[in-house]
Length: 211
Image (cartoon, rainbow, N blue to C red; front, top):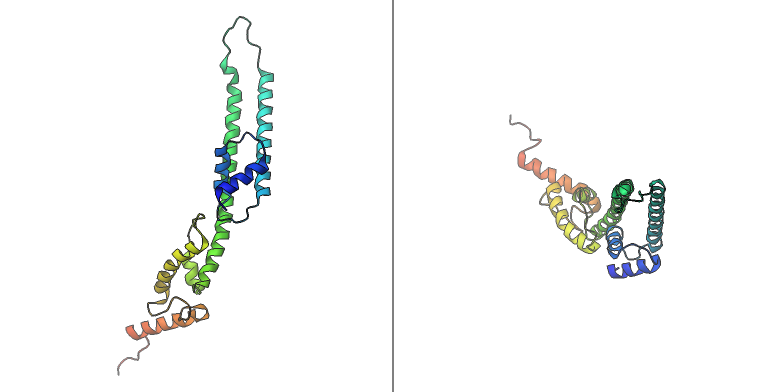
């Protein structure tokens, strides 16, 4: 789904708030990948409404508490004492720091879930394209971070090149890395056996010593 369409739907469901367009845009970039065809808008809008309500209530409470503690300015003093607001500013900065940490943790959790879901789709697509050796496939995907902005088909196409290289490294140059060859599916063991048979023949494993 296009980002503009996502933003339009979020703003429509969210209603009037003091959130800026940049804030909403940053939230969409962090939590709603454009590769997701049917985002759960109710979940995202509910979170934003809850966040906005809590934020407004906490700020209002702290402002009222700070005002109640403020002493009246001396009658003869013409300029306001700006230091009266130092405590309020400190509390507000602390609150914003906690808010940013919470947002970062949520972004990390959402990113991890997105990676796991995307990895499962890419793996399934690679299997369809012939990456049927489970060990080689696991080695190929180990430590890979997927680009959520790319399609599943594009990611699978890129990783199939890595799969072929990994297959050759694991099974030997004589093994076929795709469907119908020695390295596909249940034939993975045959590929390994053939590899060691060639190595045995080349290096003379198991030969009886000359009498």
